[in-house]
Image 1 (tube, rainbow over the protein chains, first blue to last red):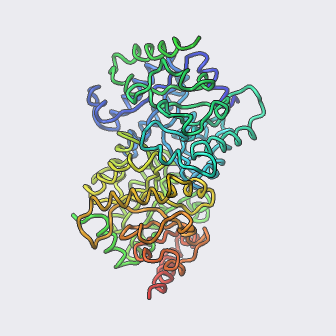
Image 2: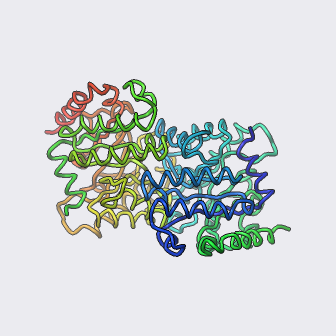
Image 3: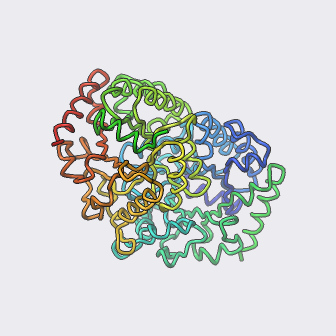
Amino acid sequence: MSGFGARLRSAVAAHGRLCVGIDPHAALLDEWGLAFSAAGVREFGLRVVDAAAGRAAVVKPQVSFFEQHGAAGFAALEEVLAAARAAGLIAIADAKRGDIGTTMAAYATAWLTRGAPLEADALTVSPYLGVGPLRGTFALAREEGKGVFVLAATSNPDAVRLQAALAGHVTVAAAIAHEVASDNAAADDRADEWHDVGLVVGATVDRAAVGLADALLERTPVLAPGFGAQGARLVDIDRLYGAAAPHVLASASRSILAAGPGGLAAAIDAHRGELEDTLG
Amino acid sequence: MSGFGARLRSAVAAHGRLCVGIDPHAALLDEWGLAFSAAGVREFGLRVVDAAAGRAAVVKPQVSFFEQHGAAGFAALEEVLAAARAAGLIAIADAKRGDIGTTMAAYATAWLTRGAPLEADALTVSPYLGVGPLRGTFALAREEGKGVFVLAATSNPDAVRLQAALAGHVTVAAAIAHEVASDNAAADDRADEWHDVGLVVGATVDRAAVGLADALLERTPVLAPGFGAQGARLVDIDRLYGAAAPHVLASASRSILAAGPGGLAAAIDAHRGELEDTLG
C-alpha cells in the first residue's frame, strides 16, 4: 500500500495542485436550485465530484455543511466521500477535529480507517490541545495509508494573535510545524517522498511573520485556503510558497462553486490552467 | 425564553455541579456488554441519561464516540440528545468545533438551533482560528437560548506550550478568556446572572501560570474536565476554582461510567455527594 504522501504526489503530477472545495452552504444550494436539506447537500456534493473527476487531484468536503443536516447529512457525506474515492479523487475531510486520548483516537478512526462509513483519504485537525495528542492520529493515518493536515497558520486575520503568539522563542504556528516535522522525520524512511502529515498554511498568511520558513515545509503537503474569494491569486502561488510551492494544494471553493452546476467543469479547468501557467 | 446561563444556574441549584460524561468508547462498550456499533452507543447513551435524570444537572455526550460509527452513530446521538433534553437534563455536545465564516455558522446551526436534528443545550468550541470567528456562534446561541463553552486551558500537559504562549503581555488562554468576557459583557444586560458563553478550564490547570484569575471568570460557566481518572479530586473543587467555584461544572466520565450500567445511579449520587460536601 502506498503512503498518502506518495499518492498525493502522483495525483498532483497527473492533475495539478487544485483542491476543489465542496461547500454546500445555504446560499449556494439556493443558487444551484437545490433544497436546503440532506438530499440537497448530497446532490451538490455528487455533482462537484462528477465535475472534478479527471480534472483535479483533490476534493475537500467541508464537513459542517453536512453536519448541519444531522445524521441524514452525514449519510449524504458518506455517499459523497465514497463517490469521490471511487472516481480516483483524493478526498480531504475538512473537519478540523481536535481532542485528546481516546476521544481523538475515535475521531481518527471515524475518518481514517479503511472501511469506516466516513472513510476519507485525509483529515484536517486542530492543535489547540497541543500536537502531542495528535500523534496517535498521525500513526493511525500512516498505518492506513491516509493523511492528516494540521492547522498551523490560517487565512483569517483574527487568527494571527494566537498563531503568532510566542511559545518560547518561536511562534505557536512554527512550534506546531516543528513538532509535525519531527514526527514526519521519525516516521518516514524515504528521503525523497512527500510526508504523510501536512499543514494548513493559508495563502494570505505572512509566512515570515509567523516563522514558517521554506525549510520547515520541506516535502510537507500544504493545504492552502485563502485563494479566490479570500483574497490571494492563484498566479502568485510560487511567490507565496517559495520552495514549498510544488507540494501546495491550492484550495478554492466559492470561486469554482459560484459557476453553478453547469459551469463547474469549465471553472475547474480555468483554475487549473491558472495554476499551470505559474510553473516555469 | 430563559438564557442558557439562567437555566444552568437553576439546574445547578437543584441538582449540583456534576456533569456526567457520555463517552461510549470501545473498551467501555465491551465492559458494559454492548456491541461496538451505533446500536451499542445508542443504548449506552440512553442508559446514562436514565441514570442521570433527576440526579445531575448536566450530561455531556462526547461526539467523537458517536461520529466513529458514521451517520448511524449520529442518528444514535440525535436520540440520546433528545432523551436528555426530554428528561430535563442540560445536554452539552462536546464536539470542540472551530472554523471561520459560513463554515462556523453551519456548526453553530447544527448544534444550537431549536428543532435541529442534533439540537443540544450547549456546544464546546475550539479557538485555534481566534475568538473573532466564534462571535457569530455566541450570538446565535443567545438568540436560541443556548450556551457555548470555549476551550481556554485544558487538562492535558501537552497543551501548556500553546495555551501559555504569550500573545502580547498575556497568555493565549487569558487572551481568549478576555475576549469571551468582553463579548459577554457587551451582550448581557443583567448584572447578576450567569453568562451564556462559558470557558473550558481543566481542573489540573495551574490557573496562575496561564493567567486565568478569578476575576476573569466572574459569572462565567466553567466546564472543568480533569476530575477523577485525570487526576484532580472533586473535594478540591473550591480550592482549585476559588471565587469561580460555584459556577464550575465538574465533569466526570470514566470514574462514573466504569461502574457499569447497574452501578451508574449510585456512582452519580456518590460524585454529587462529594461535591456537596465541599460547600460550606
